[in-house]
Amino acid sequence: MKSIYKHLKEYTNHGPYPFHMPGHKRNKRFLSFDTDPVNFDLTELSATDNLQNPSGIIRNTEEKTAEIFGADKSYMLANGSTGGVIAAILSAVPEGGRLIMARNSHMSAYSAVALGNVSPVYVYPKVSAEQIPGAISPADIKAAFTSGAKASAVFITSPTYEGVVSDINAIAKITHDFSAILIVDEAHGAHFKFHEAFPKPALELGADIVIQSLHKTLPSLTQTAVLHTKGNKCNQRLIRQFLNMVNSSSPSYILLSSIGQCLELLEKSSDAFDSYAQKLNNIRKALKGLNNFSLIDENYISNISYDISKIALLTRDGKTLEKSLLKNYNLAVETSADNYILAMTSVADTNYGFDRLVAALSELDKFNKKVDKKLCSEYPKPVAMMPIREALYKPAHKLVLSEAAGLIAAENIAPYPPGVPVCLPGELITSEILDFLPNGYALRKVNVLL
View 1 (cartoon, rainbow, N blue to C red):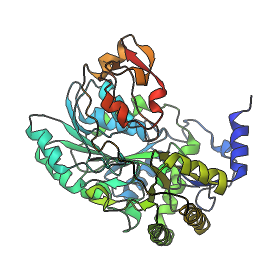
View 2 (tube, one colour; view 1 turned 180 degrees about the horizontal axis):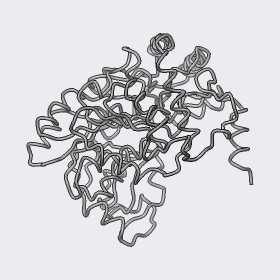
View 3 (tube, one colour; view 1 turned 45 degrees about the vertical axis):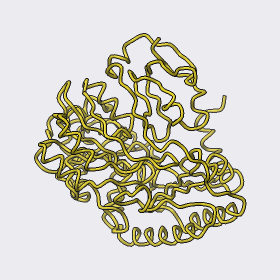
């Protein structure tokens, strides 16, 4: 059996250009170690500090993180945004309390709902004909409050996986009018603060807690993330306590050190981000000139703003396009769906990479056909038959998903990426849900309640 190490070595030696996470893009100009990383594989010592109760170098780094990102307090995370999302929700919503949350939230948010026995009140994004979720409407947030939901907090994802940004400023004002805390999963927006070409970061628009994945869009190793707080509405004691409960007590110092290197870059990054913004403007202009691909921009689904670092192209067959880019052009995109592909970029991308992508898509444009497939344009609204936590503990049985209509899910039905559940444990599996899933997904076996 080939080891993971050997497989990755062969893959990277093959050299596909990475239009995907992580944001360092294997570009050693933006992230490198001048020593073997194994030398940094240490544990909690008096000389190395302790992430669960920092008082030395880790505390200093968290203070520097808060300064750079404009937070009042920041927490370093070494197991991705997942732990930050869970800790944020559990700190803001008491056991059994209510949380107004966007239905297109990452599965980590639903883990928090289950762990805290939280009662979710869902708001739904608009969805394009290509099944790409859009922004969350401030009016829908207000309607959730005025309908009687005495929620302690609001949780939304902005930007979405595809780059759609919600009106955080308006949502924050509404949330605070109802004396609640606004938590923003900004995992894909850690780069926002560093150039005016990007949307304004949620911390500047009134959010109380913001979680960001450094590794997604900045030069840092996979699993590195931060949780920021601003204002006096957050319970810092509970945030730290829940972070310590859901995160590893033995965090990787290799990962933590990459956060420090990323911060050093961000402190002197203006020229690099100016160059990056210009590259994005150039490639987006070139791609908009193609005849048979449609580039998603700020006018898509009437959202407030859009993250131009995401290269999302509508196409007739995204899966085939992804395979063609990899096989024939050695370009690896982040993901594909039935009729779009998503290429993720970062400040570490090169002109060489962008030029190759434009050249490949220009050539493929001659053979591509415009999107003509109209799909479900409403986000499914499943019926909850029981709480998530209750469903998880019930006996379950494996069944092919396409044969499970009318049964109750016992696991997240969540195409990955981006890991957003279309159906949750305890919810009824309907034909509407099956129709919304990507082609072929319903052939998988899932756990259901009989």
